[in-house]
Image (tube, rainbow, N blue to C red; front, side, top):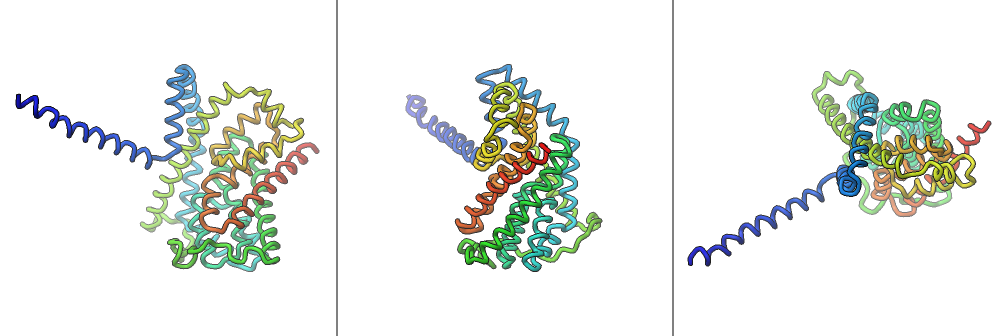
Length: 359
């Protein structure tokens, strides 16, 4: 009789324990990286819907990643080395010069710097808070997500040196154009207060750029060795997750996306191929590294090179890390101006590249 009375009470902790486990699992999912979740969710759906395709996609993804791994390793080591050497502080000092010269320096620094749209956020915040002119910052901001050593290496291996050099030139040219246009608009009275309220010295929580001399032989200093290791781990995980997701999506594109659709809408003979590529690229928020293998597959299916370049530029400038960084730091008119520059610059680069190839 006692057992019958007490048995429901004994079950209460079990129910509470189950609820606690479910709650903890949900909390962990919320904290988990969304890219890894998307990759896992994609294969989970494939396992349920099409088991054979799930196996084929897994093999395709692993083989593609194994092929790109040497280039990935080289790009990670290069990025971590330049970070530990203090290259970000060289850039920060360079863009604080006279406005016209600063735009040129900032565009070049953005096009050739080792910093992605994520890693450049603290530098940009510190520059804006320190009063560096918006035109120079905008030149750097537009050019920086478009090309860096990691992208250059991976893109050369995937899309060829000609296309990679075209995008590098486009990154520098767009940085110059964005800086010059912002300088002209600001000279007419716009963007007098570009920063959001509370973003400024002591208000944004971003540490000022502390002096850090350039040290190519950084391994003699413990702090720089630690910075190298942290940067290498961060960049490795960042690139790996996006490339794995990109290869998984590419495996499905080769099966489910007819080549004739790509050729008809984004091919060289399509009248609106480049504007359509920009219209898709701007809202797509596709990570630049993930876009490389996807665009390579689209070009093999018939996508015009000019449309491919326009898509990469539009998606790169307005990728989620880059656009969210702009939105978080500046007022809405500056953010909208940033999107306008991205769209117009993508169109111009796409048409220019297609015209050069047609000569």
